Length: 134
Image (cartoon, rainbow, N blue to C red; front, side):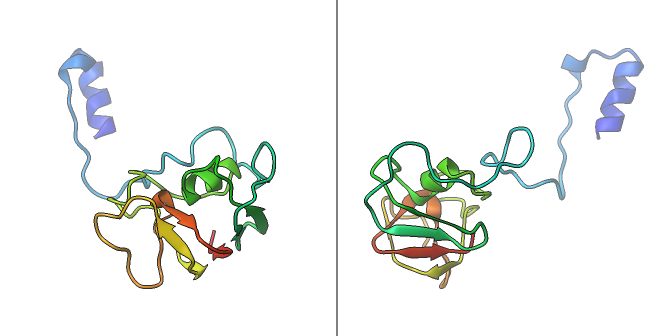
């Protein structure tokens, strides 16, 4: 479709008069992973939290939860842990993550509960130490 739109513009049509819709496989919508180059996981900025330990297994990082971060997703972002997200409210399930230990509480009840063995970081907080497959 991009090639068709470009050809139409070369033929003299104004870009404002061309509308395309692309259906099918595209790169995943992942607003949480934007910006130049890959980031390296690190401790979140500021003083260390006093909450339960959150360990990101794949990233090799452990940190304490903090009241500064309302959800596990916010803590994950503060640590530059690569993850997927979209709605931030438990509706889309884009952020579904397998917890290796599941001790979370939902701050906002998801529209639909995640499948067994999964959690939604976008709307959950740790209640005790938690190990996430991130």
